[in-house]
Length: 188
Image (tube, rainbow, N blue to C red):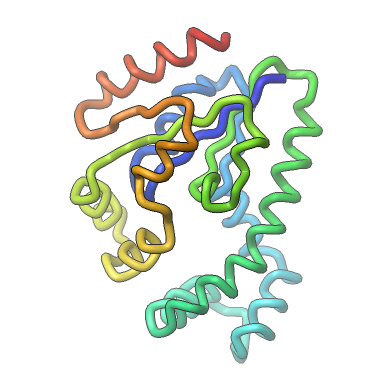
Protein backbone atom coordinates (compact mmCIF):
# COMPACT_ATOMS: atom_id res chain seq x y z
CA UNK A 1 0.00 0.00 0.00
CA UNK A 2 1.43 3.33 -1.14
CA UNK A 3 -0.04 6.45 0.47
CA UNK A 4 -0.06 9.88 -1.14
CA UNK A 5 -1.07 12.88 0.97
CA UNK A 6 -2.41 15.96 -0.82
CA UNK A 7 -2.31 19.27 1.03
CA UNK A 8 -2.34 22.97 0.33
CA UNK A 9 -3.63 26.24 1.62
CA UNK A 10 -7.35 26.98 1.84
CA UNK A 11 -9.12 26.98 -1.59
CA UNK A 12 -5.93 25.97 -3.42
CA UNK A 13 -7.50 23.11 -5.38
CA UNK A 14 -6.59 20.18 -3.14
CA UNK A 15 -9.91 18.43 -3.80
CA UNK A 16 -9.48 18.65 -7.56
CA UNK A 17 -5.91 17.32 -7.39
CA UNK A 18 -6.91 14.48 -5.05
CA UNK A 19 -9.84 13.49 -7.30
CA UNK A 20 -7.59 13.55 -10.35
CA UNK A 21 -5.06 11.32 -8.59
CA UNK A 22 -7.77 8.94 -7.43
CA UNK A 23 -9.52 8.89 -10.79
CA UNK A 24 -12.28 6.81 -9.13
CA UNK A 25 -9.75 3.98 -9.36
CA UNK A 26 -7.95 4.46 -6.05
CA UNK A 27 -9.56 4.98 -2.63
CA UNK A 28 -9.73 8.63 -1.59
CA UNK A 29 -9.86 9.94 1.97
CA UNK A 30 -11.16 13.50 2.22
CA UNK A 31 -10.59 15.09 5.64
CA UNK A 32 -13.12 17.87 4.99
CA UNK A 33 -15.81 15.31 4.15
CA UNK A 34 -15.02 13.48 7.40
CA UNK A 35 -15.36 16.75 9.32
CA UNK A 36 -18.81 17.23 7.76
CA UNK A 37 -19.82 13.76 8.96
CA UNK A 38 -18.50 14.55 12.44
CA UNK A 39 -20.62 17.71 12.59
CA UNK A 40 -23.73 15.54 12.12
CA UNK A 41 -22.94 13.27 15.10
CA UNK A 42 -24.93 13.91 18.27
CA UNK A 43 -21.96 13.08 20.51
CA UNK A 44 -19.92 15.78 18.74
CA UNK A 45 -22.76 18.30 18.92
CA UNK A 46 -23.13 17.65 22.66
CA UNK A 47 -19.40 18.12 23.19
CA UNK A 48 -19.40 21.38 21.20
CA UNK A 49 -22.44 22.75 23.04
CA UNK A 50 -20.75 22.05 26.35
CA UNK A 51 -17.32 23.42 25.32
CA UNK A 52 -18.65 26.62 23.71
CA UNK A 53 -21.67 27.07 26.02
CA UNK A 54 -24.25 26.82 23.24
CA UNK A 55 -27.88 26.54 24.26
CA UNK A 56 -28.90 24.04 21.56
CA UNK A 57 -27.54 21.87 18.74
CA UNK A 58 -29.18 23.81 15.89
CA UNK A 59 -26.91 25.45 13.28
CA UNK A 60 -23.73 24.57 15.15
CA UNK A 61 -21.47 25.43 12.19
CA UNK A 62 -22.95 28.92 11.88
CA UNK A 63 -22.65 29.51 15.61
CA UNK A 64 -19.04 28.34 15.60
CA UNK A 65 -18.17 30.63 12.68
CA UNK A 66 -19.50 33.59 14.67
CA UNK A 67 -17.56 32.51 17.75
CA UNK A 68 -14.35 32.05 15.74
CA UNK A 69 -14.82 35.43 14.01
CA UNK A 70 -15.10 37.10 17.42
CA UNK A 71 -12.40 35.06 19.18
CA UNK A 72 -9.58 33.60 17.07
CA UNK A 73 -8.41 31.35 19.95
CA UNK A 74 -11.65 29.39 19.82
CA UNK A 75 -10.52 27.83 16.50
CA UNK A 76 -7.72 26.06 18.39
CA UNK A 77 -10.23 24.75 20.94
CA UNK A 78 -12.40 23.43 18.12
CA UNK A 79 -9.43 21.79 16.38
CA UNK A 80 -8.49 19.96 19.61
CA UNK A 81 -11.88 18.27 19.46
CA UNK A 82 -12.08 17.62 15.71
CA UNK A 83 -8.53 16.57 14.80
CA UNK A 84 -8.39 13.40 16.93
CA UNK A 85 -11.75 12.34 15.48
CA UNK A 86 -10.50 12.85 11.92
CA UNK A 87 -7.30 10.92 12.69
CA UNK A 88 -9.38 8.03 13.96
CA UNK A 89 -11.32 8.00 10.65
CA UNK A 90 -8.04 8.20 8.72
CA UNK A 91 -6.75 5.10 10.54
CA UNK A 92 -10.03 3.24 9.83
CA UNK A 93 -9.80 4.18 6.14
CA UNK A 94 -6.18 2.98 5.90
CA UNK A 95 -7.01 -0.27 7.64
CA UNK A 96 -10.08 -0.89 5.47
CA UNK A 97 -8.03 -0.34 2.29
CA UNK A 98 -4.77 -1.99 3.37
CA UNK A 99 -4.87 -4.42 0.43
CA UNK A 100 -5.07 -1.65 -2.18
CA UNK A 101 -1.98 -0.58 -4.13
CA UNK A 102 -2.49 3.17 -3.87
CA UNK A 103 -4.39 5.36 -1.40
CA UNK A 104 -4.98 9.09 -1.80
CA UNK A 105 -5.51 11.37 1.21
CA UNK A 106 -6.68 14.96 0.98
CA UNK A 107 -5.76 16.65 4.24
CA UNK A 108 -5.71 20.47 4.48
CA UNK A 109 -3.65 20.61 7.69
CA UNK A 110 -1.41 17.63 6.93
CA UNK A 111 1.82 19.49 7.66
CA UNK A 112 0.44 21.60 10.52
CA UNK A 113 -0.73 18.35 12.14
CA UNK A 114 2.73 16.81 11.59
CA UNK A 115 1.33 13.87 9.59
CA UNK A 116 4.07 13.83 6.92
CA UNK A 117 5.55 10.50 8.05
CA UNK A 118 2.13 8.88 7.67
CA UNK A 119 2.51 9.17 3.87
CA UNK A 120 4.99 7.84 1.34
CA UNK A 121 4.73 11.05 -0.69
CA UNK A 122 3.26 14.48 0.03
CA UNK A 123 1.95 16.77 -2.70
CA UNK A 124 1.49 20.47 -2.00
CA UNK A 125 -0.99 22.36 -4.17
CA UNK A 126 0.30 25.91 -4.53
CA UNK A 127 -2.02 28.73 -5.57
CA UNK A 128 -1.76 32.52 -5.32
CA UNK A 129 -3.58 33.94 -2.30
CA UNK A 130 -5.67 36.34 -4.40
CA UNK A 131 -6.94 33.45 -6.53
CA UNK A 132 -7.67 31.32 -3.45
CA UNK A 133 -9.68 34.14 -1.85
CA UNK A 134 -11.63 34.64 -5.08
CA UNK A 135 -12.47 30.90 -5.22
CA UNK A 136 -13.48 30.85 -1.56
CA UNK A 137 -15.84 33.80 -1.93
CA UNK A 138 -17.26 32.29 -5.15
CA UNK A 139 -18.34 29.30 -3.01
CA UNK A 140 -20.49 31.73 -1.00
CA UNK A 141 -18.13 31.82 1.94
CA UNK A 142 -16.89 34.72 4.05
CA UNK A 143 -13.65 36.59 3.43
CA UNK A 144 -13.34 37.04 7.23
CA UNK A 145 -13.37 33.25 7.78
CA UNK A 146 -10.93 32.84 4.86
CA UNK A 147 -8.46 35.21 6.54
CA UNK A 148 -8.78 33.46 9.91
CA UNK A 149 -8.30 29.99 8.42
CA UNK A 150 -5.50 31.13 6.12
CA UNK A 151 -3.57 32.64 9.05
CA UNK A 152 -3.97 29.35 10.92
CA UNK A 153 -2.05 27.55 8.20
CA UNK A 154 1.70 27.57 7.69
CA UNK A 155 2.98 29.79 4.88
CA UNK A 156 3.35 27.95 1.54
CA UNK A 157 7.16 28.25 1.64
CA UNK A 158 7.26 26.23 4.87
CA UNK A 159 4.81 23.62 3.56
CA UNK A 160 6.89 23.19 0.41
CA UNK A 161 9.90 22.18 2.54
CA UNK A 162 7.95 19.14 3.79
CA UNK A 163 6.52 18.18 0.39
CA UNK A 164 7.85 15.79 -2.22
CA UNK A 165 6.00 17.52 -5.07
CA UNK A 166 4.57 20.98 -5.66
CA UNK A 167 1.75 21.43 -8.14
CA UNK A 168 1.08 25.01 -9.18
CA UNK A 169 -2.62 25.65 -9.63
CA UNK A 170 -2.69 29.20 -10.96
CA UNK A 171 -3.76 28.51 -14.53
CA UNK A 172 -6.14 26.21 -16.40
CA UNK A 173 -7.72 22.92 -15.40
CA UNK A 174 -6.10 21.40 -18.49
CA UNK A 175 -2.65 22.38 -17.19
CA UNK A 176 -3.48 21.07 -13.72
CA UNK A 177 -4.58 17.71 -15.16
CA UNK A 178 -1.32 17.45 -17.11
CA UNK A 179 0.78 18.11 -13.99
CA UNK A 180 -1.17 15.60 -11.90
CA UNK A 181 -0.89 12.96 -14.63
CA UNK A 182 2.93 13.26 -14.58
CA UNK A 183 3.02 12.45 -10.85
CA UNK A 184 0.31 9.79 -11.02
CA UNK A 185 2.19 7.80 -13.70
CA UNK A 186 5.10 7.35 -11.29
CA UNK A 187 3.00 5.43 -8.77
CA UNK A 188 0.50 3.45 -10.81
